Amino acid sequence: MKRRVFIKRAVPAVGVPLILNGLNINAFGEGMQFASLAGMYGSNDHVLVLIELSGGNDGLNMVIPLDQYDGISAVRSNIMIKEKSVLPLDGTSTLGLHPSMGGIQQMYNEGNVKIVQSVGYPKPNFSHFRATDIWSSASDSDTYLNTGWVGRYLNFEYPNFPADYPNTTMPDPLAIQIGGVSDPVFMGPSINMAYSLLLDQNNEVQNYTFLGNIQDQYGIEGPYKKELEFLRVVKKNTNSYGTSVKNAYDAPSTQLTYPDTSLAKQLKIVAKLIAGGLKTKVYWVSMSGFDTHSLQVEADTSKGKHATLLGTLSDAVKVFHDDLQQLGVGDRVMSMTYSEFGRRIIANASSGTDHGAAAPLLLMGNKVISGILGDNPIVSPTATVNDNLPMQYDFRSVYASVLQDWLCVPQHDVDNIILLKNFQTLPLIQNDDCIPSSIHDQNQLAGINLIQAYPNPFTTRTTIEFTTAGFHTLVEVFNPFGQQIKTLVDANFEAGTYRVDFENEGLPSGMYYLRFQNGVVQQVKPLVIAK
Image 1: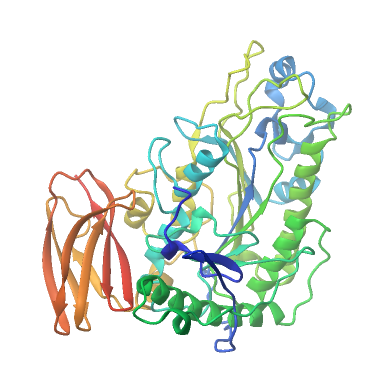
Image 2 (image 1 turned 90 degrees about the vertical axis):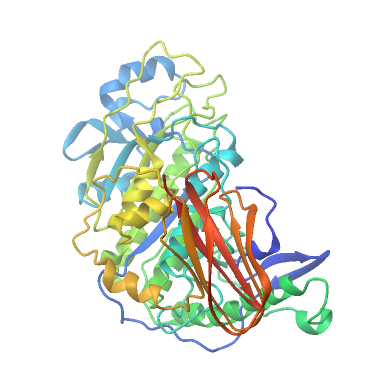
């Protein structure tokens, strides 16, 4: 995903800066229009919490293959944890956890953790920025996408965002990012789909108001007319979402005591918002510092920089899990860790590890199928400085499984969201209460569909049907790289419904996008070419 993004991809957020002709404009939440609907959602109203471990987590130092201990020790003698210090896991003698991860050890032994071994992709990239983009977009290593995998899911589940939202079916943010600016994982085909909640230096929620009157300052016919119209839609959503988030955050609840760390405070906010009644489907939190090239450990190798990071993760996740139980929402929430890559097999001379490839991934919650998926990686005692752990599971198989078995997306739609790669689904989650039609079909009706294609997917020709309110109407086709490849309609119309054919003139299979514009109204819909 490219770093330079058009203004229309700005996040509808509390406190995210937008630059318009050199002017810094901040979209901040205000207004008191929508209340959250606490307690009205079914048991399959599932929530996904993404926990990004930024920097590249050393999986061999987190989930330790005890049956490969001698081989690992031979190439990691300066950082290897003593075998007697490794935390055992019930039901296995071949695998253990870092000694700082007592909280996750307890969760595993209670049946609430799934460890997926050696997660990666075929041609790993060792750049932080590019690897993060690959994990965020679910792309191949040599393919650049301008959308994130969660953004595509949310665009599928809640069509026509942001123009028709909030509404009675979905009055709350589709996704919430705690801290930071818009993460690429939430990028949809036309806009970032997440609401960004900024925190102050004490990791408390900040309150802001929208600054300035864009329309009055520039005028409806100014040179940035389209951009300003779009910002007004974003502002409207931000105002309404600010109210629902505030209502949920202020709802009475008694929470457990969380550790005094940034991650724990982020997760505490997530638990409060879920218990407060938000229908938000995906939350994102993060912790940094995992780029441990040097001083990963101290003289006592069970302590040091990485031990502190893993302890912070484990303690925060454990109290978050326990808090969800006592708040009565534990069955609704599943958490998943991910990092842009693992570390090399062999340690470097600075008591650290360099950028690597595959690494274990954790899923946590009441509904995970607890245990270990995959075999322990085989480590040769003659490994060289360039050796990496091979991939066992493609990270997109994990995504596909989460989409299908947790977020209840039908299989054929999962293939479209993960771009027709047909990644295998994995036994990660109990899906017995996944009823796609009860929630998904209702969400699909929440917005007004002004453009659609049939058939879709198609091979040679499809018919585009669009409904215009009159005057100038534009229908365009964009490729997966965000480039316009065809203008199907660019004319004035009387109000009504019209059709136009689109011929596939040698385009490769994959996900494309229809863009519809009629005055201030814009919609973007996926268009799939299958061969």
